[in-house]
Amino acid sequence: MNDIPFTHKLSKLSKQQDSSLCIGFDPDILKLPVSMRGKADAIFAFCKEIVDATADLVCAYKPQIAYFSANRAENQLELLIQHIHRNHPQIPVILDAKRGDIGSTAEQYAVEAFDRYQADAVTVNPYMGFDSIEPYLKYANKGVFVLCRTSNPGGSDLQFLPLKSDTQVLGKDELLFERVASLAAGAWNLHGQLGLVVGATFPEEIARVRQIVGANMPLLIPGIGAQGGDIEKTIQAGGGEQLVINSSRQILYASSESDFAEAARRVAIHTRDAIRQAQKNLKDKD
Image (tube, rainbow, N blue to C red):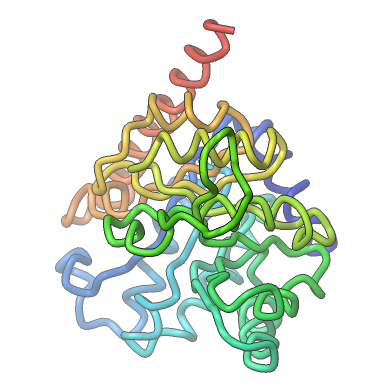
């Protein structure tokens, strides 16, 4: 499955499973079931059980690298991705790393994401410009999600700044996140492998990004669930298709008891179905 372009793999699975749900893995040692705490492979075992309980419900998985590396569990992250590829090879894995550095260092981060961890896609920070993203594009079958309008409140400190130029977007002065969207949809997208990260907490900006990039670019949308993003507004703003809607904590920590995997499945079903219903409502309006 590794020779299939990421965007094709993502689109195919989303249609097959009728799902735009992505489950993010942010394993917090203090929130794991009590029975697992203290075990050497606790993070892997916890994530593996949730994967196996939800594999028929998702379009992707998104492990966040910091939660693994902070606990010296990089080897468990490798094992988790190997497990997904071996047992659920149709499901793409997005490594949430948000890397951003100069070209030579970015080359090593690309090796880390795609050669070491064998991820299907990675999140990157565009602040240092195209040469910090270009090394990832050499892996033509891999996906690269560029941070655009992030879900955190502090994202507005920079992302919402107007640019001093004659450029306008949709009749308004161009904002920094809009420039990122334009570049990702145009000059930077050498092999058609780029997507954008746009937070569910900003539905108006999701709509503006979708207008800029068109209907075919995948949008990775964090922020529903624990961060308070609204599914209905997110779907309406994003156009319903080519969306990877991520939920992490609400699903992972649905139970702290031995039934954590079953509880995660129940919440995942509820979330997937809410996304489906919102997509149906949007189609019915059309």
